[in-house]
Image (cartoon, rainbow, N blue to C red; front, top):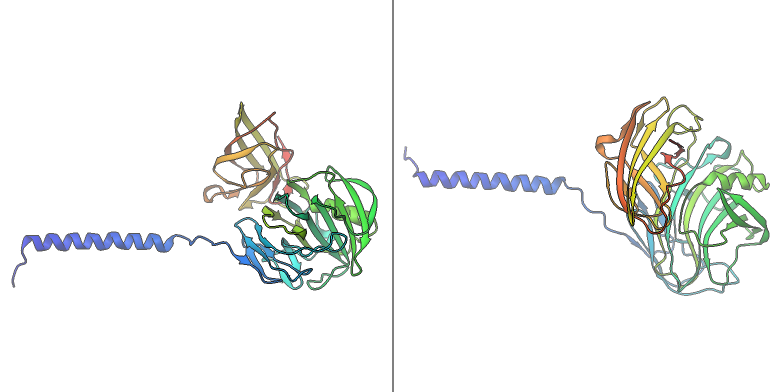
Length: 374
């Protein structure tokens, strides 16, 4: 048998090593998850899913002019909003993101519809992006009905106006003021001909907030416009534009409906404790956050929601992802600390900037349950 020269063996070895390296690279490329491209929706009632749990809808019903929304990882932006309608009538659309069911379109894994009496909390958070060259409101649309319907128009609509620009007003007339969720609101009541509407209007713009939707539901029940044996069917956040609107954005949105009391035993009002330790210097700060599970059941895949005071912005974080960088934020576990055992705790931290006087967040919610603060 003819023996191959030494340099041929060397070339074979080099070629084999090259093939091995290429295979490793190919495996890495294959294993890397593809980046999720933004989706632009221009169909009148077109929709898309974000975060695997919410639905973004174009929902253009008051005009034939083109409107397009583009989804993001955490919300959407209104990329085209042609046309206008009279400001003394209905808006031209309601581009929005929702948890629940809207005209048979239900968000993945939703707890809704759910009976009002069976819901302990329904924490939600929002961060809006406003524009000045349009006439619009920025509002939540919360739907209630005597039946657990997933199609058509519900009996009562709650609207929370976070902002309004231009000569527009809610349906009906102002019937007073109220303090709900720790904030003051103008209260309007009326009917649009197909359902009753109760509107809570902020005296000044709110760009971000974390709150309990059930505070507004219970206020609606107290005013006789719903009953405890009715159903909450949908929680939506978006904009009603009358004129223009391109550039409006929901930067982030979250919604959870707690029908079992959150971590720990059902109905446990506070099964978590949060300590928030800071180091502050002019223009900057760090925060070290410890989340303790005081319930009797493990918490898997934890998320901690809180609102950064105005002027604060996250620049980097460790042991958790914190998004968005300001306003109503959510810290999400990483693979190495995703489980909090009963009586156990997990910690994370972040660095940020601040302007003006420094303040701490007012409250924290672990997977939808309000926590006590250590």
